[in-house]
Image (tube, rainbow, N blue to C red; front, side, top):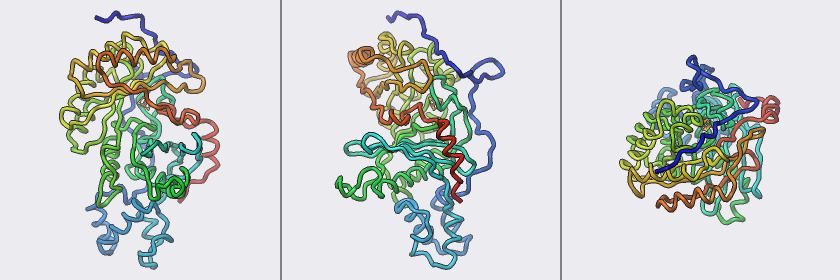
Length: 407
Ligand code: SF4
């Protein structure tokens, strides 16, 4: 039996949480209407790409050539596509592979092992991606929406609200640009580190946005990433899709037959606190989200990750670790892994990471209950690139204003 203790209520300062007509935290599921991003070749299925060629009076194999240039050679520059007929090449490439992301800033840290990119989209919306080199893998944290409509009060992205959904091609383009940066030696010269030809191996959908709120486009992007013949040929297991618990979308994902890694950002095991920390909990409670996560494991055999931001005095109590373990074990053994993540404080916030002994105790309790637990690396901390921190700062906004959109 656990002994409930007084809740530590989330408090915000200098920011008022948007509320709906009933006075509850506002949830934005629908993307505000804005001009659509330019139609792009990567938004099409392989069949549609071939149809497009035929519409343009071109042979089907041109589709394959463009796929190679964009997904494998990471270019949308007609000058680099010498296998396409010179006549009409510029126009063809500009129509099918329009530039989607204009680079505003690139910040490098961790001795060059981490790069944060700030991108401006065609309509001026800003998004970020973070590229991280680890021993044996290169991970890119991608954004799936400009802003986020889930309104989690501890999260910098959520505080800014949802600007719009990103298109599938805008999501894929983040990977293409990252691969290009790696090929150009930006993440350490590949020849010096002995990994010529290396590229992004792992994707985590933990940048800006709630990926499950932009389901169709995120899944299209994932299909492009894993397609060996017509896309990037990445391993689905290296792709992690996270959600704060949009249960119907988790169920859809369960039936997709793409063995991605699924992560549930739980952050609290009890509804009383989670209702406040994660407003979407008012729609789907902790137990429903955990049931859906367990079904993902049961159907796919893929072990689920539970993400748990450890926030000092808010959700880091020992009894909460016990309650979490109890709820996970009630559903079975060996199906789940918990990743506590010491919170990266956002500037001006009173919330901060739990103290080290508290983190250790939280982990110890989970492990005592037989739950595999790993404190997650908070790489990118010094460039505000860790999860829940991706938000355009004032300096970013100024730099963006001075950067014309590539056309
Ligand atoms: S924690 Fe995730 S879901 Fe919540 S507001 Fe931030 S980005 Fe959105």
